[in-house]
Length: 249
Image 1 (cartoon, one colour):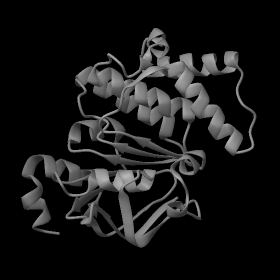
Image 2 (cartoon, rainbow, N blue to C red; image 1 turned 120 degrees about the horizontal axis):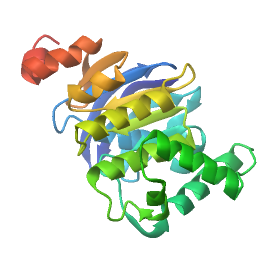
Image 3 (cartoon, rainbow, N blue to C red; image 1 turned 90 degrees about the vertical axis):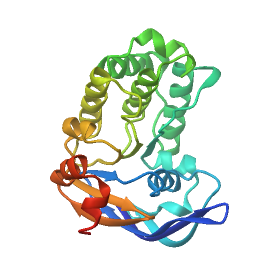
């Protein structure tokens, strides 16, 4: 589903990704771990098409299409979802307004009919219930006044409503307490665990992986994938740390 080959990327002239190669097939959750400054968020931003990140070499293929040739909104319409480490606040725009416009814009881009107001409200309430988010919070401005955990759950509600084919989740566990972590992890499983979907899950900690249970785990260091293994690799990282594990890479 996603094939990254020899990807090099920089920001403000500073190289961050240095020949990253990774394949994530449909039906798989692939976790990316690595020390601070390894390039994890840069990878997420490059895939999402964030301005300012320049790809200088390599390719990214998404469902047979050159992802790097697409604008950010075109990537979203093609089925790519980017979950942010720090979800932004959008004062003056309600969650319901934002999500209905986003969903129907994507549906129109795919040649599908827009949802009516009633159809959308039913979907939104269903997804909010799945993530145990008070439906009244969807009436509030996007992330304004939300706690860290509420922002992450609201973002997972967004993912559930948009129903992407591929989700890139950048430290979704950041700022979550134990209960919220379980809710978000269960939500990822319910929304994205399917034969025709896949997830690239960026995280620092084993605790989220205990819930989501990835198929593969890769270590990203200095802009490259240096080791890939099964879920036991994350367990080893938790107990031994990066230096000890990467010494064997």
